[in-house]
Length: 348
Image (cartoon, rainbow, N blue to C red; front, side, top):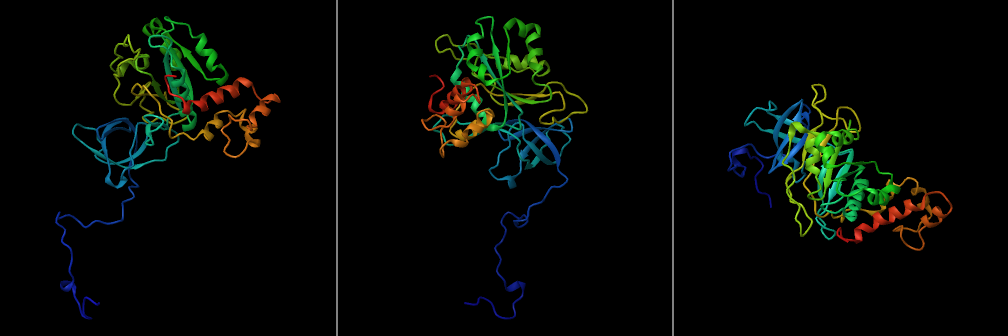
């Protein structure tokens, strides 16, 4: 039924009043072409500290981004007050495409994945050789997450004054993972920090590790200008440490006037991302078929595998590929051990 006659004017048309008194909403969103580029350094209760032209800017996420969240390491576009002075607040209007993503779930039954850090080049897996004892299954899970997310792994073993690293090195030798062995004395005199720092130059490196392994102590040695609270004691009964790092934080290895933002993959002095200690590392989000990409010597051998091959079944073509001498059998064993971590608990 026609609501109005032929000769209507604006006074005849009913409009819904805007009770808030602001402008009517529109689907047209500004492009913010003049927005400044920044990097997220830390996130705290909805407030994000970003580095923009060498200044620390506190910002919040724009409503137009919806449920999309920014995490430490994200490259973002900001508008508003970018002076960095006290009580000012900028606005993040765009999150750039990520080059790499380190993700985890609470456990293997949790469908909700959490992004730990974005755009990191390297994942430093920190483990103590004793007090607490090493947890190879947790290390394996961190390695799988690194391979899946596009990060290069680095193994850092602490407290070598309490136990030798030989057994752990033998376990991961076939993976050709770069590693550093440190002791408490070397951390105090700076030798350990120098050896670790050599692997971090020009890269954004995320540090992960079980609570109590000395991860934050190592980060403090690497970046003494921004010391974080060191780890609490290790429980003598459970062998677990106390969480002292409660939020991820990106720290520059060396601040220079001409390198306010790091360039992923090279350039600058490098960045360290300290993350809270973990007691579990769920892999519910991991597609096992992507892990094979971290084994370029084995990947060609999968061409003869049946569809959706798990690479650990009787018809897997990798057995024949390795038997023909194309790859080291230890590499196939390592691949299958990593793939099996999704069916095992970290404490097994």
